Length: 147
Image (cartoon, rainbow, N blue to C red; front, top):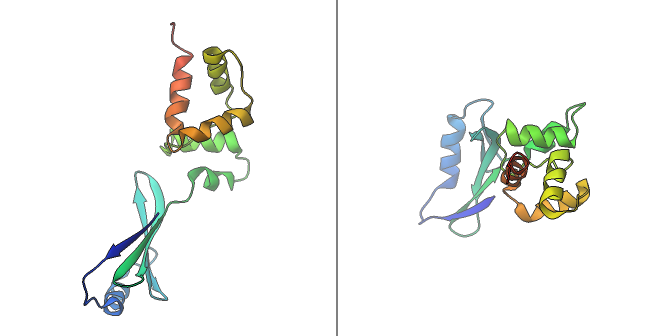
């Protein structure tokens, strides 16, 4: 996510960078090439925030939270289903969606009369972004209901 934050001049960005660099926490904060960066954690997700002088009288702020499933997929032995399931259940990623899950495919079969393939389910779930995790929970729950 990128934001542009306007400010009223005068604002001495170079002096601010000097201040931040002098007080930077090693391993968490850096000031490099006119950009202040810091690692952050928000709701269990780890990412970074970077601030630079923008066009005109504005600062550009960029928040970067790497996809949790992508980080898991980089680990040897972790496949797509496992990565999505861990992202959803353990990392609280609201968009985690194990589209190859047999239970999810079965739930749609019960609800609609036809069982989708994993690629079909994945394509359909795109419309549910960024809350595909809620859809997964509802589909799983629908299998345990008597009505």
